[in-house]
Every structure is written in structure tokens, then in C-alpha cells.
Length: 314
Image 1 (cartoon, rainbow, N blue to C red):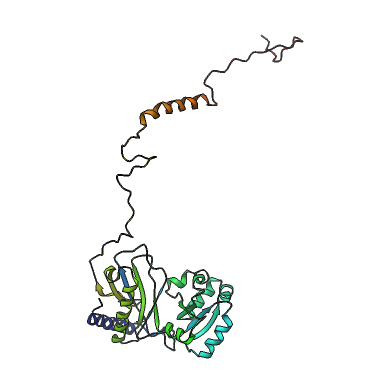
Image 2 (tube, helix red, strand yellow):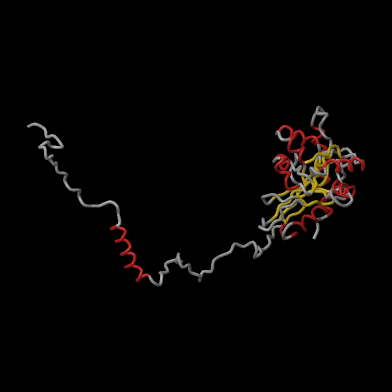
């Protein structure tokens, strides 16, 4: 199963025209604003399965959007930081502007303002797959909310140039905690045909990544940051819930020994009554509080005819 190519092309063309119209209406005062806006694909699924994949998925793109004008930061392991930085410098990637180790990241970018400045400086972050699990603690929540969490790359072994080139030609997809997720598929600087090719390729990879495939995808749309989502796929037929996702129910014929089901009586109910009464009588006898009235205190006189408690004169 795949998307309708004609419908995807029409939606991409309409989105580009809308972006050009909105851009013409704005006054040209902000010189620092990027001319190209990001295009995202929004995916809604029918069922949020228990055994979902939590790790992000790297999807290759036919027309990548991280060109030479973009800024990329590479996060390396502390022990391999200097060596990896030297290798990347020799490969001469124009996109890579900064190489930083995890140790330096935890010390120099500990304040919130430093993390925010680092996030806004670069367009893409790449990280050694060996340190990916430790980055949420050092980068903070803001990186993940703005969809700038690092792409995993293998820098220890293999061809580093091929690994970096593959990462720069990919996008990342991660399932959210709800039923709707999104991923970047291009920019408004691309043509409608290029956007349509990227959208169809990414949708096919996501369908393989999601549990249930195309049957579990309810809708797909494309949008920019300031536009509504244009629908390109919709399915109202929800799939059946698999046995692994169904809650385990207790057999109705099975009766617990300690807690009888319904109005069922215990088999030794009659024999247990005298035992209960005997236990209750034992508890009453062992009670520290006595119900008898206390005896009256008598005043005793000393042998020297001096009473212990002096009586009041009449």
C-alpha cells in the first residue's frame, strides 16, 4: 500500500502557494529570519500499542534538506573526543561547525541559557550511538520538545564519512506518547515534486516502523509551522486489537480462596462460626481495660495516731 502520488503533489503545491502568499503579506523587516520554512508530516494512528518502539528511527531522504548552508554539531564520547574531532576536520564537511564531548557538554553547558543558545546555534545534532542514552540528562527537555534531539551515528568503527553523509541525508521519526506524531520531510525551498517524493518515501518507512503497518495509520497530513495540516491519507477502519494488547481477565469459574467471588460462601463457613466466637471472647478477656467499678479508697491511720490524710474540722 502507498499514498496517492497525484493527491500528495497537489497538497504539496497548495502548501507552497500558501507559504508564498503569507510571506508576501509580511513586512520584510526581519533580516535574520530564514526564507525557507520546514515542512512536517503529521501521522495519527488508530491504536497506541503497549509493545511500541521507543527508539527513534532514521529514515533516508531522496532530497535531503541539510545542505552546506546548515550548521551541524557532533557530540562524541569523552575518551574519543579529540580523535573524532581530528578525523572530522580532515574529512572537511562544511556543515559540521562544532564537535563537543559529553564531558564538555555537562560542564560548560549546564546552565539553561547555555543550553538554549547551543540549541539555537545549530540546525542538526549528531551523536555517537554509545552516548545517546546519556544525552537527555545533559541536553534537557527543550531539545526534545523542539524536535532537535540528536541523530545516532556510529563513529567508533566503520567509514565515518559514509556514516556522516548518510545522517545528513536522513530525517528522524520518533513515536510520541499520544496517538499523533510528526517528522520533518522537507522545506518550502523545495519544489512540489521533490516534497512529494520525500513524503511518499517517509510514509512508507513509517508504515513499516509502526506496529500494525498501514492498517494502524488513521490519517496523514502535511503542514508548516504556521499552517493547518492538509490531509493526504485517511482511513476509518480501525484494526482489531491483538491478543498481546488485550488486558488479562480472570476466569469467571476460578474462585479465590481468600476472597470468594460474588455471594459464594466458604465451604467451612458453619465450622468457622464457633472459632470466631471463641476468638472474640479471648480478645475480650485479654482487654487491658476492665469494666468493673474501682474500689473505694480508705484512709489509714498511722500507729502514732496521726492520720496520713488530715480531716477537715467540722
